Figure 1 (cartoon, rainbow, N blue to C red):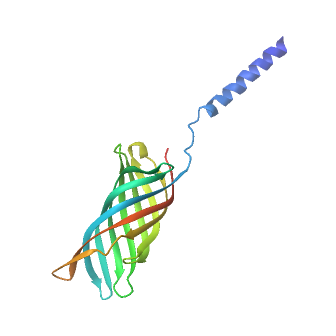
Figure 2 (figure 1 turned 120 degrees about the vertical axis):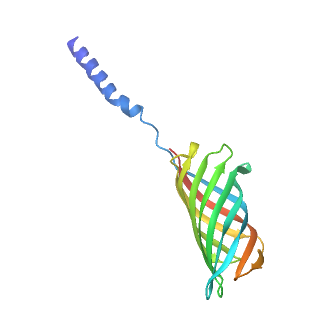
Length: 180
């Protein structure tokens, strides 16, 4: 009988040691998705050097996630951006910060950097820098491609400044992220 009591106490002790590991919060799994946004942009194009111009403006649009049932609206996107453009070779280097607001008013904050050619496109990186609401603590990123749908409308202003408006698409391919 004494042996059974020792075995029972040992089993109880072992079970108590396991309880904390059974109740550990699950670690977030990395998720992957493809998405796109149709954007409308407006800003200023300024000659900032003998062979360089800089566009400074904002891209605004709706973001859609690609699912098995087709594109699903995720929410709205606003990205203030700056793009340096080589006036001779049309090369460009862009950078911006974005806020993507889901339909339930949670936010994802991110940075975009890209290189390419003016009027062709800009490919680069999308880095998630934080979030709010259900996206608090989100991390991740992936590749991003920005494309312009048509030549922008440009109106000249005094001092070599021009206003520029255009439309295009942003593609996120294999965007990976984790939420706590």
